[in-house]
Image (cartoon, rainbow, N blue to C red; front, top):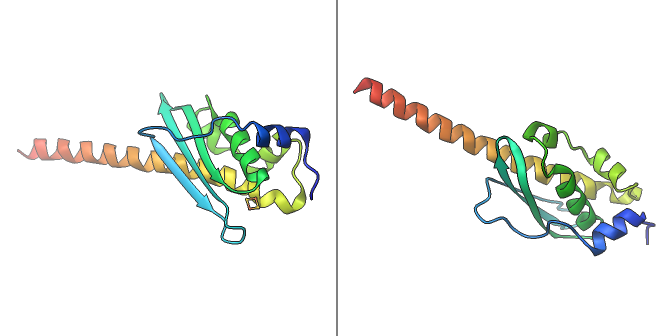
Length: 140
Ligand code: FES
């Protein structure tokens, strides 16, 4: 078994922010076809900041620790700051991950980024919808 840092063990044994957000503003789901692990991140956005971040992970211990760490790192950050959370930063915050477990940290950062993208694309649709409404009203 690979050696894990105390921080990885802590986040694995006591994961923070586990669960689902009701009516989330964005959802990001990723999976790794090789190991079969799955991760879903839910975000709530207020004034361009991640007011709440939760996750559900079906995966290895490292994947659970990574999800927990990503959720802590992302909470309270602006969308741009959170989008800059890389797998490398996550692994550093966890005081290292065994080499064969790096792909687990990729999943965490990807799932968060997908949730942010999901939020942004929904915002664009809302803005686009409003714009169409305005044009229709103008034409009337
Ligand atoms: Fe695949 Fe950890 S072994 S996410």
